[in-house]
Image 1 (cartoon, one colour):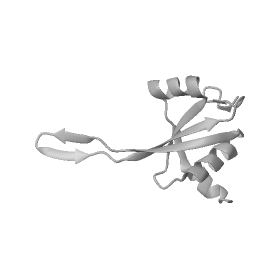
Image 2 (cartoon, rainbow, N blue to C red; image 1 turned 90 degrees about the vertical axis):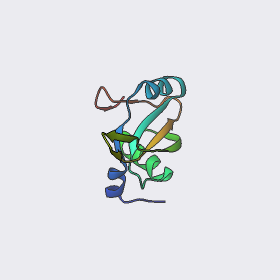
Image 3 (tube, helix red, strand yellow; image 1 turned 135 degrees about the vertical axis):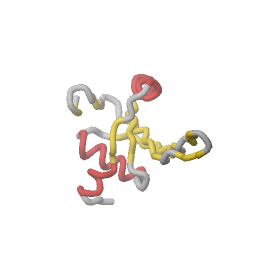
Length: 102
């Protein structure tokens, strides 16, 4: 399937950098991204391959529910978002410190 380059550039929002993401990256050769809520697995795969020039083995997507927040009596809720775990093929690497490509 081919996607428009415009759409692929809107799919990835930001790398998700946390303790869990770092642990997963070291152990499983995976990279974690925050993605658009309408993104699909094939779109995320195509976007990562286009932007970082690496080969993707698989993609797992997770919906993160927004937290319920209170301020006095009023109760609100943060927006939910989507997280993608991108598994790279052996020997592939994405380095965000050097500006993307390793």
